[in-house]
Image 1 (cartoon, rainbow, N blue to C red):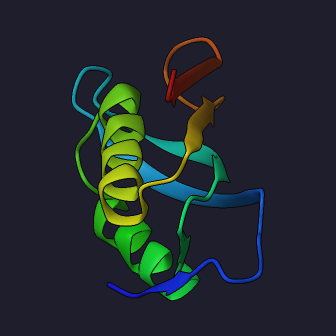
Image 2: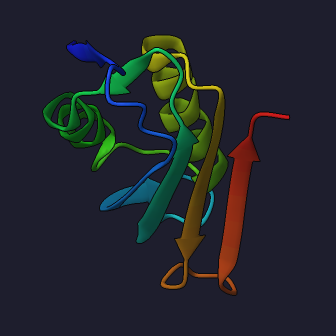
Length: 105
């Protein structure tokens, strides 16, 4: 994992990723439309590293809440942002459209 000192004073980063997971409850594939908003602290993330993290989660058997928690926990422990919110919007599951969020309080 790589990171860079926030010597440029960046105050906000937002990135998005689509990944597909298999829901063990609904027994079907679904798409996580993930949006991450963060206020970086001393470190800026390496976007290639973040892509690799998403690639590892992609296609795993996880419910939406587990996906959100895994992304949140990885980014928080790796980059120590001042603030972060991870959102997943799912509209192709066997249930109604759902938005799940986890943020620092």
